[in-house]
Image (cartoon, rainbow, N blue to C red):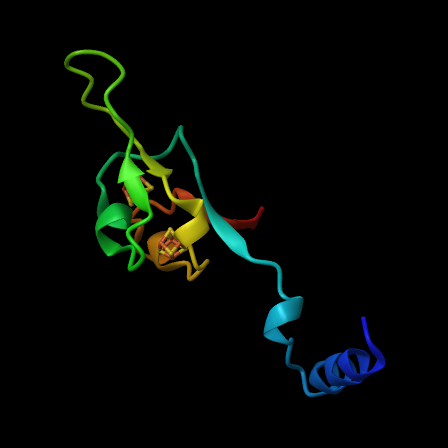
Length: 93
Ligand code: SF4
Ligand code: SF4
C-alpha cells in the first residue's frame, strides 16, 4: 500500500468509515439443507445471477437456489434480505 493510500485508509478509519476498496466482497452462501426452493431470491436479484438448480431426477420438485454467475454478483445482499427463511448468509469468498 502506498503512503497516500495508507493516509487515506487511516483517515477513513478515524472517521469510522471503511474505504470501499479495503472491504472484501461478499457472496451469498445458500444453505442447501434449509433452502425451501421458493425462488424469491432468484426473482429479487438485480443482477440476475441466481437461478434454481436443475432437477436431479424426473419429478424432483425440491430444487434449490444457486449462484450461477458469481462474476456478476455485486455482493449487495438483497437476496439474503429477501429470503423468507434466512437460508442465505453473505460470506467472503
Ligand atoms: S448479493 Fe446481490 S447481486 Fe449477488 S446474488 Fe445476491 S442479490 Fe444478486
Ligand atoms: S429465497 Fe431462500 S428459501 Fe427461497 S430459494 Fe432463495 S435461498 Fe431458497
